[in-house]
Figure 1 (spheres, rainbow, N blue to C red):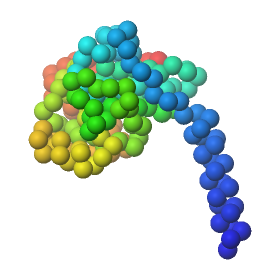
Figure 2: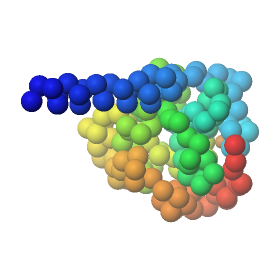
Figure 3: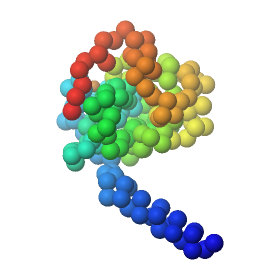
Length: 175
Ligand code: CU1
């Protein structure tokens, strides 16, 4: 049925145009001046993977000192509906101590190691990887388990935060 296939292809292309190329902004660099949207601290002063999120009606990314902090922010009900897309550092290709701007990958496509022994700005932070194999190698050395973007919820984030005895995640977070 070549006609049906063609229609399906056209529909797919239409979708991509509407959601992706028009809406998806490239990741923004994180400089020494950038402060965390949640805690207000200078982001580059901390080790570990960072995150940035593009929200509805804002052309500038919200930037975060750790992936944990970004996800706690994004899981707030009022923010969940406003998210367009987010990026995280792929620590499979960039140094944990000083993650580089060219290592940002779409957050929704990453694997995450949680419960490992490395630390980010506020204690525990989710370690993102584009490669499942790299995530496994990291978990072999640093412990923890591998989860997907869709597995991340407030309950998990609260567990990871509590682990550190940090009350940080309890701050009120709105745009
Ligand atoms: Cu922060």
